[in-house]
Length: 178
View 1: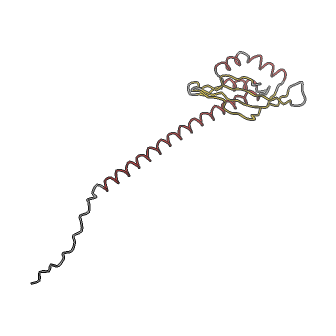
View 2 (view 1 turned 30 degrees about the horizontal axis):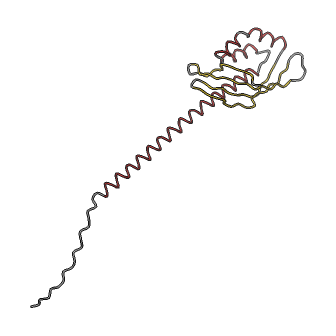
View 3 (view 1 turned 180 degrees about the vertical axis):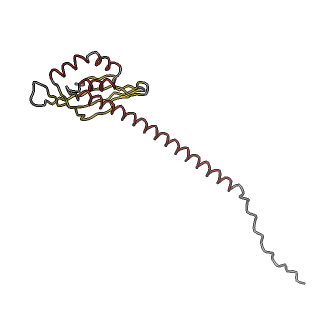
């Protein structure tokens, strides 16, 4: 008999169970995905808010530009309609000041045959608040009247306050800037 033993093949040591690994990776991936989704949602909302604010600022500028253009473009044949156009977009202090001077203004423009043709050179937002904005406007106007043969240039720098009145933007104040 053979007393020698044949060596038995070595049994590999049992590997530790990694059943926890797949759920842990899935959970980590879910956390990363949720974090990325939340970041994208926040950035999208923030971008939308910025776009809305910029659109509102541009509206303030456009209303101020139009108000100054209306003020600097007057014709003796259509002066009453020109004044109505100015007042249609006016409110507050500006409306009160202009409203009290309509008849003398119309009379002077007609009698002196004053015609002005305005042009906006530049406009920019100076400040804004919850209910409006203040816009600086540079404009020029070519003025003719019964006493002059050649159009006379006039340059203006104006500070125009634009106010939200029940969802409608209107000119509430116009002042000359030296």
